[in-house]
Image 1 (spheres, rainbow, N blue to C red):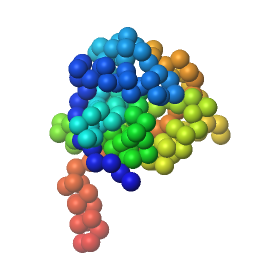
Image 2 (cartoon, rainbow, N blue to C red):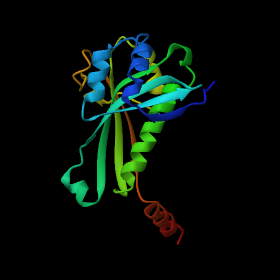
Image 3 (cartoon, rainbow, N blue to C red):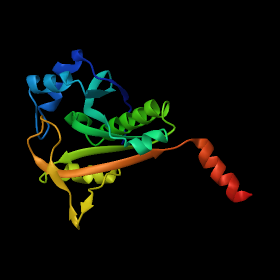
Length: 190
């Protein structure tokens, strides 16, 4: 059953609630560590509100990795690294984490598509090998582990806040102008 929730930007007043929710996670962060992550200039956050309380939160950062050749074509390539995703125990398995990830992804695409008619967004997250439930969840919502030379990609998490090596999971989304899609369909029909 999916719980109805609204997603909003994270703010400093949320910090005590975030720490309380995070105590139940597999890798709880203390007040100082969550505060440091929020203070990081490249860090962004979203919270899921359900029944007037914070049901979960997602911290992430966004990087522009667009090569010059793509930029000349007014295309953009963004990477959003998911840093911390936690859902309160009472709200788990009710669609909160899926909703957080989807709303953040949709928001980034809408925001960057306004200035770049075509582009790609890659969501990435590094998950320790022992977190099998997280692996299953990510695969269920469309993430995959990239394979290089026949082996799954394992690397050090890209943020100072993560201590574990783990599997890198990715999900990609591309956008392009509707006009181009319609023009291709129209040309094929003609």
